[in-house]
Amino acid sequence: MDDRSTRTSRRSVLASAGAALAATAGCLGSTDGDGDRPAAYTTPAAAEFDGVVDSQWLESNLDDVHLLDARDEEAFSESRIPGAYHFPDSEMLDSYAEETPDGFEVSPEAIAWTLSEAGIERGDDVVVYGAESNLWETYAIYTLNALGHEGQVSLLDGGFTVWDAAGGETVSDAPEAQEATYEPDLDTSVVATREFVAGNVDEDGAAIPILDMRSPEEYWGVDERGDLDRFGHVTGATNLNFVQSIDGEAGRLRSPEELETLWIDDAGISPDETAVAYCQTAIRASVGWFVLDQLGWEDVRNYEGSWADWGTLSEADGYYYTTGEETGTVVDTFA
Image (cartoon, rainbow, N blue to C red):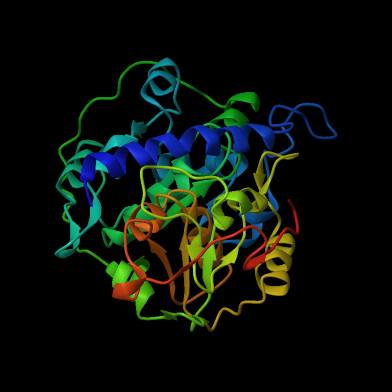
């Protein structure tokens, strides 16, 4: 696969993903019954999941964690939570990993350098936040897990928008570089390579749950994205658009009960099964990876190459796909 075309494909899909998030952005700035806190200042997911915190928790624990800001450079420079360092999407996309004809290749050096500059070491507890929803943030959390991070890496549910609306302290000065040394110890058990996916898929279906986190139109091959050889979905995959895991009205993850309904009851998968999430470029799929991890899956993986890789391959080599409107299975609980 050509690395430049993969990066272009990854970035182009973000426009539509961002539009989907905007459509669900809802009332991030709305207040609770007391009229003095945003509705997502405290969240059900933060109360239940080890890897999710809310603004109330962060306000009390700000000095005990390291912060990574996954927003764009302009937003970060304008205002950030004290102690936060920027985690650029360019490094997550361009310098982390790729599928090649010679296999799966990982180059964590740039990310390790950024974490070192942020004063983060492998055993530190880290909170990742973004603007208001959960896309780049979950991809950052997945990336740190793949680097073998040993401390707790958590999502700030509701993101910077809720923190700011709640009157949380913000600063605009650039943070000073630190002198930590981040030494990655890769944990590829969270990564599904093309060969792992191919080993669990044949012309009749999939042996394990394969979750397609794109829109139904992309899943069917109707919405064609990128300069690829084919469009559709991995044979046997179930479609579950990533935005369904986000409560747009409250500007946070859906409640644990809703997520269980979506993933376990309606998608029909079980925590004792190995599951693989994918999308176009592994970014939207990281939402599914993160949610399943929080719901208790012991083995859940993100297909790093995703459709930007699978769409370049051939059935003659064992990379099966299905195309056509209304094919496969679409879960639309919160569509």
